[in-house]
Image (cartoon, rainbow, N blue to C red; front, side, top):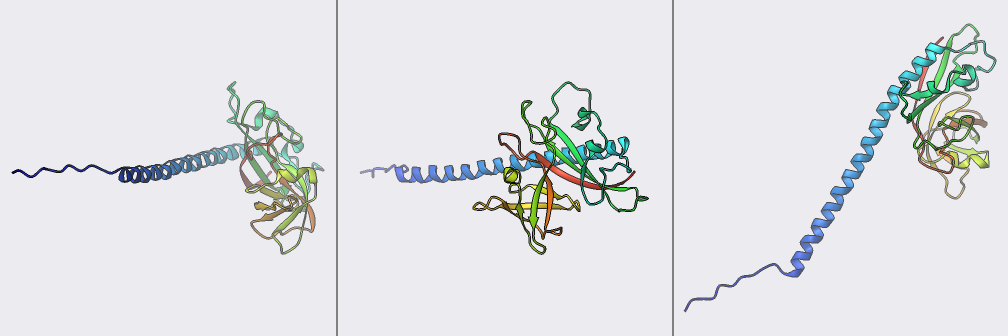
Length: 239
């Protein structure tokens, strides 16, 4: 007599294991796509910021700075619009006559490199920021675009810790922000803000200024939101 041929299929356990393995793999693959999109967005914005900064430096050279202006002092940063009040739309990028809403804006802080009145060298710090949504408002002297604002701080020489002296401005400086020392123009990256003591921030390097002073930072939008500053660039320009 012929032997009966047996046919065996997959058990339910084997199917569940296969589906579970596939699901876990798809989760990891999906995560890599999200991370890739995130870093692509950052790279795109920084590329735009570099071009916007070049345009900003060109405009600053074009419009110029009055070196005899009493607001321009060697131990303090001064907003460019205080030294030269140009039209507001000049701070938008790209600087075209298009009626479309602009998303990127720049601001600049200026400081003479030397105290010698014959020196024509000025350190220029350009902040490039994004504006999301036409109705978004920002802190400070200009509410329709992100601009750097001063925050009083206290530090200790030889330490990378700063204390924010203005309680109402503590939330302006958060993890990942870049701050600029008002006295020297040096850039510092904020590694973290203390959870238990929100007036304490830790920098990426040792604070190299006075025990008391101030820093410039681009605050978040009014009501909260994403950190608007994309990048900060510095150049020394001869006027």
